[in-house]
Length: 150
Image 1 (cartoon, rainbow, N blue to C red):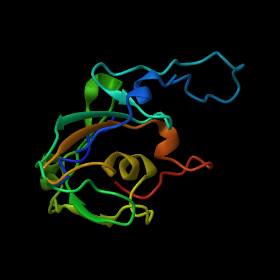
Image 2 (tube, one colour):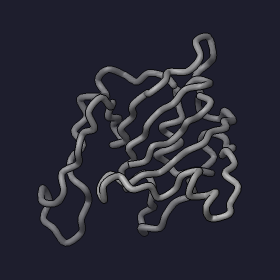
Image 3 (cartoon, one colour):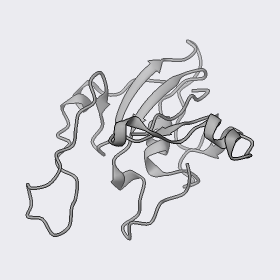
Image 4 (cartoon, rainbow, N blue to C red):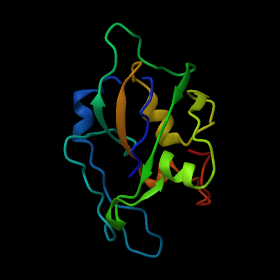
């Protein structure tokens, strides 16, 4: 899973989004219906794309929600769902590697970051904190190449 955006942005999602069937992980070579069933994260909202979102802090009241074309600045940390939630990228790991952990700056919808983060940023408000649980389809392209970071 990807705990993303400790962004300067949180919002709400349609109530019917929690009814989304997450289905199975796409695993070539297996018959349809076989394979790893996707896990619903307690307290999260599942969107039609398979992205699961959990608002930790909704952000400042009175600020507008981020939308397509808006410029945003956020920080993020990445953890695995399996493998005991091990971090694969955090500010601490970046500092240990000698890399200055700067916030990410992007325009929503320009393809600078992976699809899952772009979708998760939409609707956030300034100061909001949101956890994103991103399925593989929203982080890799059809050729299984990792999309733009983060």
